Every structure is written in C-alpha cells, then in structure tokens.
Image 1 (cartoon, rainbow, N blue to C red):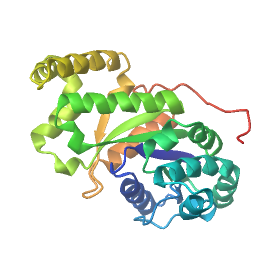
Image 2 (image 1 turned 120 degrees about the horizontal axis):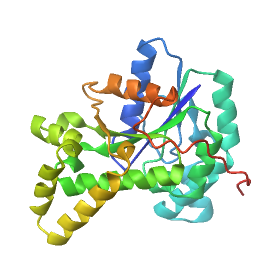
Image 3 (image 1 turned 90 degrees about the horizontal axis):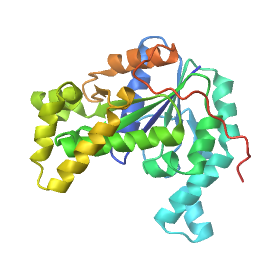
Length: 265
C-alpha cells in the first residue's frame, strides 16, 4: 500500500491534483482511495472514500466552543488527530494499492502542528511520500521561488518523509518562465543575476543565501511541472514516486521512518 500526501499553501491546487492523480491511477487499473483531512472543506472535486468530516464538524466546533474561524480550524486539526486510528481502520478495510491524502487548505495546521505529525505517523505505511505543491504563479520571480522552496524544506523538516516538489498550474506559465523555474539550478549564475535585479538589495541577498543553502540538498530543489488542467507532468510525478517507493530516489532526503510513541490527548 502506497501513501501519497498532498501538501501546499492555500489555493495551490491540492484537492484538484489529488482528484486528477486518482483518475490517472484508476485508468491504469490501480485501486485508489482518497482520504480528505480537511474538516472545513465545503466542496471537493472528488468524492472522498474516507472523510474526516464524518468525525469532525467545523461548524459544530465553532458553535460548541464559541470560536472564530481561525480558532475553529486549529481545534479541528487537533481533534482530527484523535481520530487517526479510526481513519486508518477505514483505509485498511479497503486495502487499496494507493492512498491519496488531501491535507487541509491551511497548510500550517497539518505541516507544523503536532497533530499533523500524529496523523502522518499513524495513517501511513513504509512507503509514504509527500507531494509538495508550489503554485506556478509564485515561480515568475526567483526570490518567490526561493521562498517557496525554503517553505518546502521546512515542511520536510517537520514531517520527516520523502518529499517531491511539484510546480502546480504549470499551464499558466509561459515557456520561458517554465524553463527558468524547472532548470534554474542548472544555470545558477543566471539566477544570481536575476536576483540582483530584484527591487530590494536585501531581497536579492536573502534569496541568494536561501539558494546557497538549498543547493546543499539536491532533493529539495528538484521540481516537476504539473498541470491538473492538461494532465501534463502526471506521468513524471508517478515515475518519480515509484523511484522513491522503490528505494531508488537519490533526489530525496529520505530520513527513514518516523513514529510518535506518545498517545495524543
């Protein structure tokens, strides 16, 4: 059983890519199950097979605890972790080939809170990977792409799973922008020059420092352009994941299995 978590900032296209990748797998006779971990989702492009909303109600949390939206999202994230075992049971009852996990729109609630670590340490197998989405609109400037890759590195540091970056909505980029975004580490001097042209000298300097740090870990700088609209790059994403699951993904910083032994209260 393969687990694939889709993580990214709000609006980066996690749910849409989850749906498209699921359809792609099913067309190739792969038994696929989708888990929705967003209790606040009003609408999804797919029908989840396992849904956290069956256990946690965003509206009820707001009413019962008299919380605003932000506080309710935090409370829901923590409550979701308490149902990790039940979610796992529902998944294992189906025994699919692939489990695609669509994480909350508010990425920080999953990636940086203890609840997210509990979920990914329970709802997993020895073949679990994270797909981190970088919105293509953030890739038009080197400094924005550097910041996005730094955030991706922070997510991997928090979740401690093999991870791959995808440039979502890549159909929105021109051919030149796409080439720069996906091959910028092959032409570092050009990227340095572009960074120095940023409107702030401090911004250019910070971007260069981020770039230098990320280059120490090649797996954190690889990017696969993907378009849920055209289907472009889906086969590349699948091939990359197979390399990771098969133990041949040299581009990834694989830190090994991670478990939380203490129960969540």
